[in-house]
Amino acid sequence: PLAALALSTMSREHIECDACDKPNATKRCSNCKLVFYCSAKCQRSHWPQHKPDCRSFHQSLAAELAYRTAPEAPGAQVPPQTTDTCGICLERLNQPVTLEGCGHMFCHSCLRNYQNFSPNATCPFCRAQLPDVDQHSLDRASMHTARAQKISGAEKQAQCELALAEVQKILDVDPTDLRAGHMRAEILLIAGDAESAVTAFKAVLELNSSNQNVQDERRQILAQADAAFAAGDDDEADRLMTMLEQGGASPKVFAGGKQGLLETKLKLAAAQQAMADWEAAMELYMSIVRDMGDDHTYGGPKLQLKLWMGMTRVFFETGEYERAICGPGSMGIAMNRHYPGVHKYVALSEKASGDLTAAIRTASRAVLYEAPWDPDNKAENHALLNDLIAQRDESGSVTA
Image (tube, helix red, strand yellow):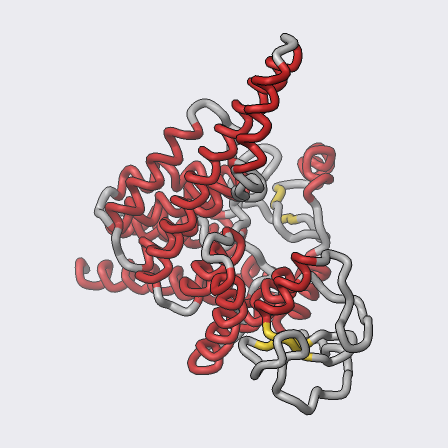
């Protein structure tokens, strides 16, 4: 296994005991292969702390391999529709949706309007259950996006185009649909169109902010109406409730509240980084840090880790190596040293600042600690370490 190979070929000076911090730890957890110890005594003493996080390495490896090699699940086998006419508008099909239960096809907009008119509607032809047409398109877009992330080249672009076509069905009917707009931005980023992704993410964030303002106003009006009812002013209460009714349904905002907003901002920053717009990315990261304030639970550990990793890379790319190493870089490693890529830009910053010894130590720890079940990440870390060692040896031979 890769983890065993890494342990046997790495310098022991880079392996620290997770119980007492002494170097040259020669033992490790046989189950998860993620923590190291200098003795059986340290391993036993650390077990109560380690137990909640201990997951089987072999199960993690099997899950990773299953994800990479899993065949696509076949859809329901139904006889194909032999006509290209929509059964609702009786016109030529436009952005067709095929019902998985019966195989009948309708225009996306027709089926959507049909469902809005009658939420419990069934297939007009055979009375089969209808799916949520928008969710159906989003699910298909997610399927194509997942496929795209497993492949590359022309096949990847083809899957991204299919995914974009699915979300466009929703946006053609409702350009303000946040879910579809957000997924479109993600697909553009995966497809490598970072500039369009930046524009799309900004539009989604602006729409969410506008919808949030409308929701806040509606809550204020509702509170005023409740107060008017309580005070016996029925006329004023009726007037306020009429205002709410005339305003229509309350617009939607990101699911998950602050967490959904933070996730979108981080994806916008990733798109800005893909454009090498380091200044814009750092400005966005710093605004997130200001929003966090003293709330150490803001967004949750995973999104916080992505924030620190993103900031580390931007500091590296802009030549602020010390800030990358001592600031978000060290925070990210302390938060989760096993996360893929968490050591990379710390090591590169140490190298760029002239400290090859520190860079080799950090890259060695990346090989030892980061996701041993992920062969691609393991290979990338090995390549970085070998490059750093070669540079050290070359500089040593030149000096000699």
